[in-house]
Length: 313
Length: 313
Image (tube, rainbow over all chains, first blue to last red; front, side, top):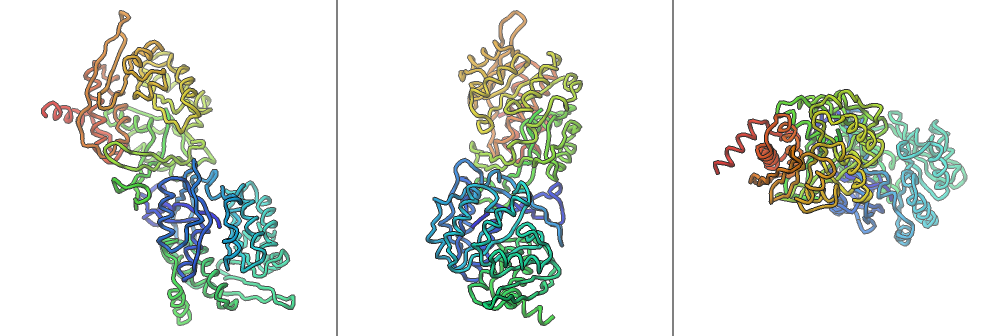
C-alpha cells in the first residue's frame, strides 16, 4: 500500500537533466516496485494505490498487469494528474529524484472507506510505507489498514523517509510511532531509523524498534551491510549482519524495493534470518547493477545464481 | 513576458501517453516560443520569465542562448520546480497538453520590483499574455509592465486562455479588461475573444477590442482564416481576411507561437495588414507541418519560400 508514479528516466547515464536528450517511461513508486519485485518471485501480489484519471494512469494499470500485479485496488482520483518522477543517474552513488504532481499525489488520497479491509486482513504479508503517513486522508487509511490486520500474518512498515514529503522529521516520527505498535517488521536505513525512533546507531535503532513492538528490525547500514535483529520467544534477541553483495552500480534506484520484494518472499518462505538477508541483499545488488527499476526486478533463480557467484568469487 | 517550460514530448506520433515509450526534451512555453520565433526572423529578442532552481532550469537557459534569445531577464525561484509539459500528438487536430509543476509555476512568481522597467519601456515590441494575468504576483507585474510602456512602441497582448489556469472565464475577462487599455495589438482565437470581450463573432470581437483601445485586432477563425482589423486615423477601420496556408499537419502545437513571432517581425517591418497576415499564416503552417515547436520555428526565407509555393499551387 503506497506510492505509484510514472518514472520518466533518462536514456543517457552520467548526465544531468540539463544535458539529457531523451527519456524512457516506466512504472515506479516505492510500494508499487515492491509489489512487482514480490510478483517476480512467484508471489501473488497486489497494490493499494491511486492514480490520476489520465492516460498515464491507464499506462500504470497496463504495466501492473504486465508484471502480474493485481490492480483491482488501484483507482483514479478525478482532477489530479498521475505523478511523474524524473531522475538523474550518476553512478555509483548519486541518483537525485525530481517529483512532479505530488501536491497532493493521488496515492495520498487513499481513503479508509474505499479500502477492501477483508483483502487487507487476509494478505499473508502486508506492506505499508512511512510516505503513506505523510498526509491525510492516506495517513488515516494507512493506520486503519494496519489496525485492521489485527496482527494476522506479517505486517511490514517500510520506514522510507523523504524530507520533501514532510514538514519536519519530528512530524514524521510522531506518525511512525503511531504505526509501529501494529507492525511486525520494520525496514530502513540509518537516517530512516533516526526518523522512526530517534536512533542512528544500528543496534540502538533495532532495540528501539523492538521496544516499540517490532519483531524483526532490518537496519540497512550501507557498505557495512544489513543488520537484522529479531526477538526470540524467551524475550531475547537474535541478530545477523550480512555484508553487501559487491556489484558495479549502474542505477541505485529500485535496489531498496528489490530488497523489499525479496523480503516479502523470504518472510512467506519461512527462511531463517541469515538466508533471508543474503537473498534480499543479492536481489538489491542485481537491480543496482541494472539501469531499470521495476523492469529490472530479478526472479528467485537470478538471485540464487548471484548468490552462488558471490560465494564462488 | 510569460510562460516557460520543459516540453517532454513523445517521440512517437498518434499514440497516447498510455502507449508512448520514449520522449524528447525541448524548450517550451508560449511567450518563450514567440521570443524564439522572433529571433529566427533576425530580431533581437529577450524573454522575461522564471524557472525553478534546478537542472531543467539550467537547460532552459542553455536552450534560450542556443536560439539567440537574451536570457538576462530569466531568474530562478528557489523551492519551485521548473514546469514540465507532456503532450499527445494526434494529427491533424488533437494535441492535448498535460501540465506539471504549475501550482504555482515560477513564471507566475514574476514580481514588479524584479522587472527591468527600462528594458520593458525600450522594447520596440513588447509581448504579454493572458496567462501572465492568471495569478499574483505575475498579474500585478504584467499590468505594471504594460503601464510602464506608456504606449511607446507596440504592445501586444496574446489573449491565450487556458481554462485550467483560471477559476472561471469571468475572472479571466476581468483582468483582460484591465490590461486592454494599455495594449495596441490583441491576438486570439474565437474562444479567447469571448473570454477577452464576451464576443465570439469575429467582426463583433474585433469591434469590441477596438472599443477597448486596441489598434489592431487579430482574430483567428481556424479554417475560415485570420481576420485582422485595424483602426484608421479618420476613426474608421480597415480589415483583411486571409485564408490559412494549406499544410499536412504533423503537430499543431507551436503554430500559434510561430504566428506570434512572425507578427512581431511584421510589426517591426511596418508591413501592411495583408502582407503581415499572409506571412504570419505561412509561419504558423510551417510549424504545424513539423514535429517540434521551438526547434521548428522558421526563418523569414523559409516563410517566403512557403508563400511562393502556396501562390504557385
